[in-house]
Length: 81
Ligand code: SF4
Ligand code: SF4
Image 1 (cartoon, rainbow, N blue to C red):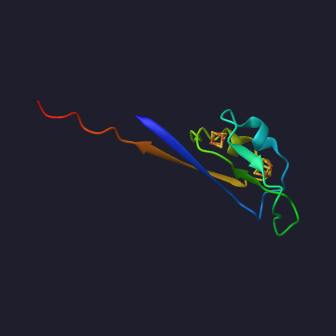
Image 2 (cartoon, protein in one colour):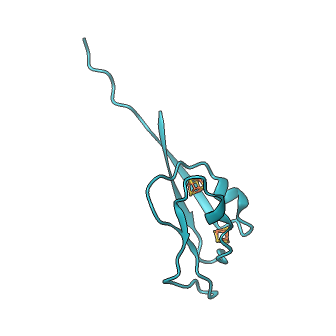
Image 3 (spheres, rainbow, N blue to C red):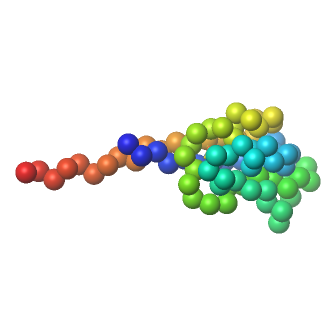
């Protein structure tokens, strides 16, 4: 079954350290240089499709700012013979 991931990054906790950006094997994270968190940091964000939900970003984040969601995509049932 195919798996698709999605991450939610907390503006409250993210300090823009870029560790998650460097660690993501799919290279789908970036630092949002066009916005600031309430604490004045440029936060990380998803920049593209392709997140697999591997959770490596969440594991390396020193602030526990990332929540990973994984969605298992069901294949359509084979047509009846
Ligand atoms: S869950 Fe994996 S693929 Fe998705 S953003 Fe995090 S490190 Fe990248
Ligand atoms: S590792 Fe955590 S604190 Fe650092 S940029 Fe990524 S989400 Fe923000």
